[in-house]
Image (cartoon, rainbow, N blue to C red; front, side, top):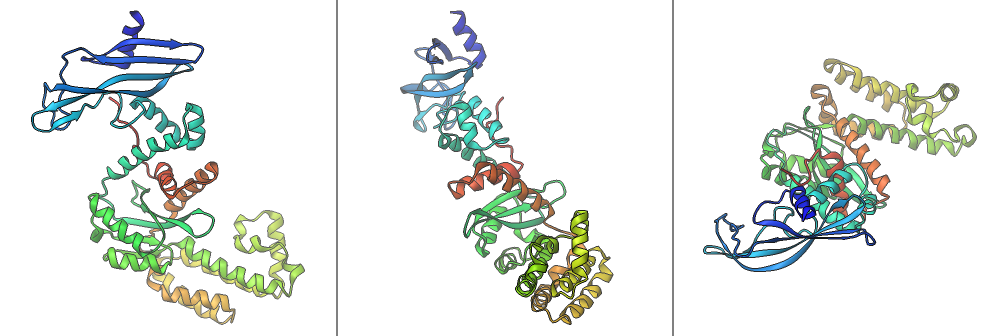
Amino acid sequence: MPDVDLFQRALGLEKPWEVVDVGFDAEQKRLDLRIDFAKGAKFPCPECGREGCSVHDTELHTWRHMNFFEHDAYLHARVPRVKCPEHGVKQVQVPWARPRSDFTLLFEALVMALVAEMPVKPVAGLVGEEDKRIWRIVHHYVDQAVEAQDLAQMEELGIDDTSFRRGQSYVSVFADLGEDQRRAVFVAEGRGQETVERFAGFLADHGGDPGATKGVCQDMSGAYLAGVREHLKQAEVTFDRDYVKQKLSEAIDEIRRKEAKEHKKLLKNTRYLWLKRPRNLTDRQQDWLDELLQQPLDTARAYERALKFDDFYELEADAAEEYLRRWIDETRATELQPLIEFCDTLEAHWQGVIRWHHGHVNNGPLEGLNSLIQAAKRRARGYRSTRTYKTMIYLVAGKLNAGPQLA
């Protein structure tokens, strides 16, 4: 029949496989293709590749295929088990699908192309499948791609955490900060010292050397720091510039909140004025801030100290350390307790703060990846499990070649 020959060629089937029947139901919008092999056909052993193994028995299986125009398409075949003299009875692997999958490779390739651009739930609606079945496909290929990573050249690491859902549910993201990489390579549940230990083991299992890690950029988390010192012993830690500035902004906001109790009208709705730098303000906001800076406010004094702190990151390395010591002395003289506590933090983490000037290692690339993660999380409106969240992070930030490798 011409239609049988057409689908035989369209599927690229080779002997002994052949399309033997085509069923089309226009009312149900469904196409069914039955594939079979000739009586007496022999197959290679799936375990060792030995040719000429006889069929022991068969099992009927059905796979969802890519749509035929707007019609759902399914392939049906008797999958043989063959007798190998060395390995016994083994099931043959069909060329159009992976083992234990209910979908063809082409269907799975379509799914992986779609989920790279949109959340899984809309993809499931688009292809007419339950989202949990689509997630099984995605998990398989992402897990496969993660395990296939070669991390032999990884030397610079960024560590950051991101919330999984409201509350204290977090995952830690470990990223290669190398100039040509800049991608998430490992995601672990939690944000403690043990996550660094798990990363070090993962790195060693994928061609890398934990002892060869030269630099780590992270926040001031004591748990991460302890993990790095224990498991990445040669790495020099740099504390992320944006994180350090964030801690200073938190100190300013603490001063503002306390002072607002006394100057409620003056400081009402000013929170974001103090958290931004002048270049990021509108003209109206700049005028408003200028008026506030003329007032005898502790918040204004703290803000001016923050502007001077920014200069630390603009200086050359040989001048930066002296400048920071002087800034700390002057800031302590303000007697503003939140600022004094920030100074204590700087001194307790001195080497990691100063080291930024020597390597300029920063989590900027990781922050960019985190923006992608947060955008994907908002589009999906939450994830039901940590596993799906981790898989999503790999998809949007891992630069993985995830999907079936079609000939």
